[in-house]
Structures are given as structure tokens and as C-alpha cells.
Image (cartoon, rainbow, N blue to C red; front, side):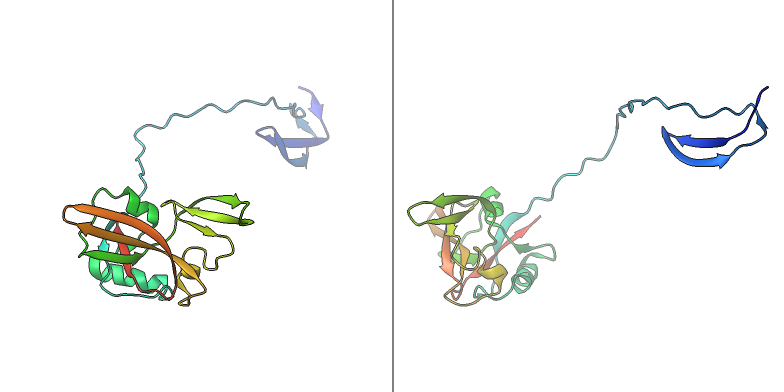
Length: 191
């Protein structure tokens, strides 16, 4: 065997990670350049399926709030009525619910907006935010559809309310932009 003196490279997955003195070792040769190897795909079987938690509209909190009551306060009102996992619905969750609670004869409630897009209104010279319900708000309307995340109770800020009406067996569902000093219940959703 030949004797080699110099530096020994420690190579891991084609990357030199250390160089050490290697004098007087018999049979040690310098590292060759590693060849790149493509990773082998791994197939996972029997993995658990994780589904998103879908919240659906269940009803209304019993307390009327102005738009500045705070999201935590409104969520607590929903939890008192429908259990610890209840919270204020988004407009999209209301629209995706298969059943609606019976209003008596109508209910007005705050909902969280679900922004799905924007557009520019050339006639007004401003952009608009578009909610899942179809309601839109001009970009210069303070409150961003939620009374500033339910922190403002004045007429200069705006939020989104659900109006649910009944006339016998028929229901009406509408979403409106309202001033934040308006009163409304909280529309509550649960998983």
C-alpha cells in the first residue's frame, strides 16, 4: 500500500465539511468529487387526513353591540350562547351554512368581513374592497368593513352587518355597510 501525506477531506452528501491532516496513513486517498444524486420520491401511506375546521352560522348572541364593542367581547357573547368554540361569523361562513336560524321577525347582526377582491371605480376615483357577500366599501371609508376590527363606535367608521328576515316560510339574507354607532347582535358560528 502506498503512503500518502496531505490533507484529508471529509465529504458528506457531496459537501466538504472538514479538512484534517493525514500524514503517514497507509491506504488513504484524497476524496473524489461527489456525483449529485437525485432524491428518491417517498410515498406516504396511511397518513392521517387533516381537514379544515368549517364554522357554520348557528344563531345570534343575545346582547346588542355597537361596532366598537370589540371582537373578544362579541366572541364571548357567542360562547355564552353556543359553547366555548363559538365566535363571530365571517360573511363567507354565513353564506356557506346550509341552514339558517329563524329570526323573529328579523335580526341584524355584526359579521366579520371576508375580503375576496378589490376593484377600481374610475367614476369615483378610488379603489373598493369586495366582501364575499358582494358588499363593497370604498377604500376611503374608514374601518375596513369591520369598524376598525370592532374598535370604533362612531358614525365616521363603517362595518358589515347581516340582516336576516322571515316572512312565513321564506327567509331573506342581506349584508349591508353600516355606520359603527349602529346596534346589532353578533352572528355566531361554531365548528
